[in-house]
Length: 512
Ligand SMILES: Cc1cc2nc3c(=O)[nH]c(=O)nc-3n(C[C@H](O)[C@H](O)[C@H](O)COP(=O)(O)OP(=O)(O)OC[C@H]3O[C@@H](n4cnc5c(N)ncnc54)[C@H](O)[C@@H]3O)c2cc1C
Ligand code: SF4
Image 1: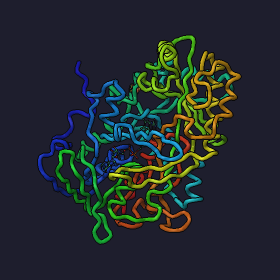
Image 2: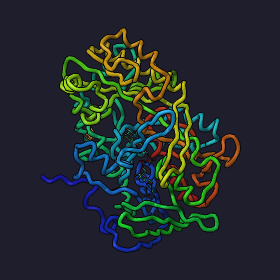
Image 3: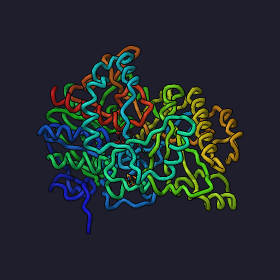
């Protein structure tokens, strides 16, 4: 039987494809939402649910479930920003990975859905004056609604897979508290290929949930249309100017407001292009840089089966600033990190099915900056601090110990200056003394925060860009609803918090 997916059979006229748009386009709505990722999709749905007319504008194309393939580099070219070549520039270059398609980064993410740690919200209230925006009591109904709508639950037995199972079992043996990851999914089949888009629409990315749901409520989406600027007249946002990929201009008026959800990297530059000049705009960029480590077992692990990320250790989050997790790597990506050349490399590739990959993310205390670079590109400058690097090498030593205690024959740390393959547990201490130099590690960044942060005051030591009503201090009816408004990073995967805040923001915008 031919299965139908939620991104098919959409209402007529609900999708305007900027690639195919044959003329300039001009229209009016109550609200225009920029960006269709975690924040934008939830915001558009909440607004549409109230009966308001909503236009959602997305720079990337809508890649349908039916068209997802399993080749990583094809996915990079078709769905990732700059084909996955964006970087954080600083003491080292760190790949910065984001989606640029309908659904944003939720199309390729691993569906992990953790609520934010209570202590982070308390910090936002105490240090940054966020008041009830950062109150768990206020956010709770939003988390509850998202969890119910997107089917958040722990990884099910049938799709746990060996990569996740060994990690959980070993943590338990060492007395470390590890849990099955909570994910937004309905019927995950454990294909381990969330990075190329879920082929069965089991993963509840925005492309198969809140975006189509908003369209069925009457919203309209403009795909392959890049918003150049928000139009501000007499200090008030009145619409947007975009350019369709086919070349035609798109002018959308917004009677009640413009909500920006273009991600912590694109949002500040869009606000700058729109004329905002707040001192803190683009500042305070934060991330959770992460890295993976391979462990080779004497038996098959088969990373190609199991939830892409299915097990978590949060025990060291507050004490050491790190979170440990599993991640199934497709062979094309894992291959770039497999050590050796020639015969040595071939021998290692031959045991790929025995390879497990575990990872860590660090709650980095560094702050970076987003500016506009050469040719108008988004430039992100960010370096890890010495403290971050100390935490990273401590976390790597923990991961390596877990691997060896679980029976791994070899561990591949991927750290310059350390043997490319560790063969016994007494070599773990080499990681504890790894160079405190970011260039020695193979980081990647996918969790992005700050750059248009929220606060009661525009100026001062904790100056901000956006007020507690999600409205920019500089322009009325211009709202920022993505993780740009977060005053700090979280220490846990962010999409759940981003969506809850976007939902709260939209409710408050409707009440304004
Ligand atoms: C590979 C990967 C795995 C991840 N795994 C997880 C996970 O399991 N759990 C988790 O919590 N988080 C995960 N994340 C992070 C999470 O997906 C993001 O934090 C979240 O999606 C960010 O939401 P957002 O709305 O701010 O941005 P995005 O979801 O990135 O959406 C922003 C959208 O805005 C569009 N846009 C930008 N500029 C413009 C413009 N000028 N005009 C029109 N449109 C524009 C972009 O094209 C994009 O589609 C992962 C991220 C990646 C890349
Ligand atoms: S692991 Fe599950 S959620 Fe991810 S792509 Fe496969 S079936 Fe979909």
